[in-house]
Image (tube, rainbow, N blue to C red; front, side, top):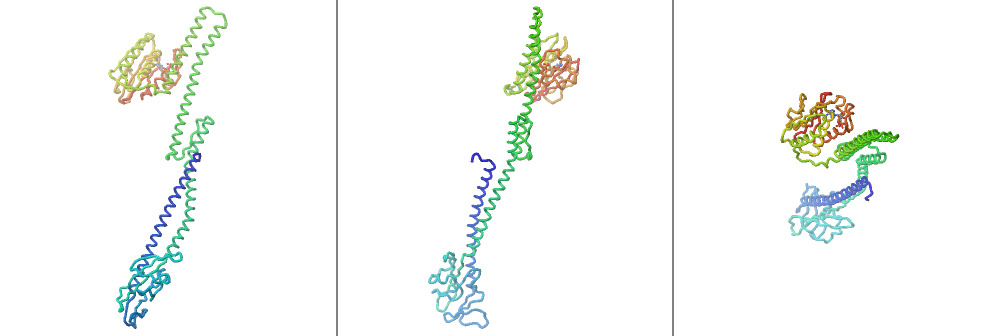
Length: 481
Ligand code: ADP
């Protein structure tokens, strides 16, 4: 049973329930019909007998005009009206003396009831040759000269009612199995139809795992029902899987590509240097090249590791309330120490600003932005780090429009360096992207990707305004939470 399909189980369950419901209903209807029919028969028996009672009178002499039957009795006559019903709708009525002699009417059980005493106004039963009879006796309220009593006995067999019930049972015995088979079949077809999308999901999953094709999607016909929603959720999961798989692949290929350059330079340099005997100066020069490329590889690998950690397991960076004003001041002070080429750093920080975030990541974001401002700044230039709250207009970049995004905190880093061309602007946040103008400066192309990722993890927006040869402003907008 455990290995049976859902379709089979549904059909079986539905059929069993249907048989139970139909069986119980049938038995209940049968029992109540029997009761109702018997009640109707009894009522009809009583009413027929009672009506006949009114059709009997005792007279001393026959009337010339009356069209009735006259039975001589006790020095007079029993006048029986023509309305007296001997047999009507299977109800037999007969007139009896107190001693049990039939005077008038009909009784199919006259032989079986010979000598049986009368019981006043009481229904009783008798089974004769498999047929159940209802009997009802009624004493006549006629004062007779000899003081004797007269009785009317009504008899009705239940044959008619039982025949009707037997017919109902026979019809039901034919109809019920047909209804059950038809319902079972429709349950099977319905289950088959309802489970079709699930089979599609199974088929698609099978195809994906066999062919490694993450592009496949399930066809969702009715997105409103549960199965449609499941298919939709499955498709969304595939979208995400495909996306992260592609990102993973692109990252691996970009990373290999980036690492290939320094590796090739190191190999070429060593081949060249070892190819012939070199002077000590030439050896030193070769080692310098190798050291430079080694350093480049080192920073590439450590940036790649940092970025991957951040992108793949952001949950390892716990969030807490961070004193952003303090963090910006502290980071700016540290970065001031490594300033180069005569570039000066100034910090303009509004006190008491806090955000919910990770202090290590926020410090890294600022280090990357200041690092870029140094590297792409002009000699003896200026870098301004500013932090302002509540969406105030001063973001630290003179002459540049303020971010108008509503209340929040704006962190901005402005330099007066080489700037970024309009063409490069949309690409600088891509991983490993480096503009041609910055090739002479050491870098990995991952700094701004990290900035963007960190901002994302804090629900912040990144904005850049730049003009070639004038400078750039990078703004991070932390919305008020
Ligand atoms: P990297 O600086 O290591 O090349 P980034 O991701 O930090 O990588 O920056 C990507 C590119 O964006 C840089 O190569 C440079 O062309 C440009 N860029 C970033 N910051 C600045 C800046 N402050 N001034 C001018 N160009 C910048």
